[in-house]
Amino acid sequence: MGCAISGLGLIPKQQTQPRNEDDAVAHLADEQIEMIKESWKVIQEDIAKVGIIMFVRLFETHPECKDVFFLFRDVQDLEKLRTSKELRAHGLRVMSFIEKSVARLDELDRLDLLALELGKTHYRYNAPPKYYGYVGAEFICAVRPILKDKWTPELEKAWKTLFQYVTGLMQQGYLEEEGAKHNHVMVSTKERPDKRNTAL
Ligand code: HEM
Image 1 (cartoon, helix red, strand yellow):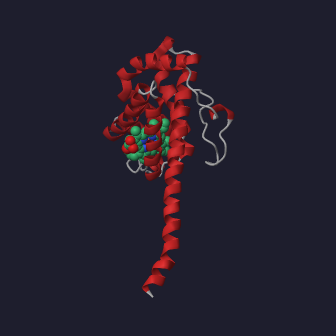
Image 2 (spheres, helix red, strand yellow):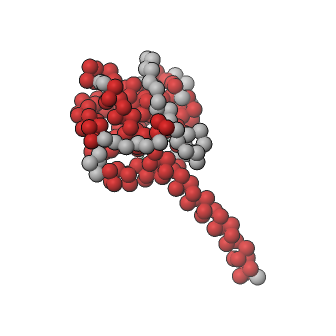
C-alpha cells in the first residue's frame, strides 16, 4: 500500500502564514495542461475506484481527516470502507470536481470561481485548509498504477501543480467565508447595544 511521494503536504502550518516554496506559485504551464488532459482520458475510466482508493488512503495516512466526516468518523475498520456505497458516492463527488477542473484548464477564471466556492462550502463542512494538501498526494498514489508506464516525473509535477492551484483557491475561499462569518458576528455584537438604546 506504500506510496512514497514528497512535496504535497503543502498546506501551511498557520493558515495565515505564507506558503512554503513548493506551493508558493501554482502556475500551470501549457505543456502541463496538455499532459493532465491526456492522462485524464485514462484516469476517467476508473474514477469510482480512484475516489475510493484516494479516501481510504487519506484516512489511513491522516486519521484526523476521518473525524471531519460524520458518516465515516466511527468506522474503525477502514477495509469496510472499500465497499461502502457512501464512500463511493463521496469519492465520485470529489472526482467529478477534478473532472470539472480538468475541463476548465483553458478557462482558468471559471476554475477559480469553482474552487473558491468549494473552499467556502468546506468552511461550512468544518474541513480546514490544513488537510487539503494531503488529497493531491493520495490522488497521485491512486492513479500512478493505472497509468503504468505513461506515468512520468513531469506528469506527476503537473498533477501536483493542479492540486496546489485548486487547494490554494479552496483555502482562499475558506478564509473568505470564515472572515465573512467573523465580521457578521462582530457587526451583530456591535449592533446589540444600539438596539437596546433604541428600545429604552
Ligand atoms: C483537493 C481537495 C478536496 C476537494 C477537491 C474536495 C471536493 C469536495 C466536493 C466536490 C464535495 C462535494 C460537495 C460540494 O461540492 O460542496 C466535498 C464534500 C466534502 N468534503 Fe471535500 N474536497 C477536498 C478535500 C477535503 C478534505 C481534506 C476534507 C476533510 C478532511 C473534506 C471534507 C469534506 C466533507 C465533510 C464534505 C461533505 C460531505 C460529502 O459531501 O460527502 N474535503 N468535497
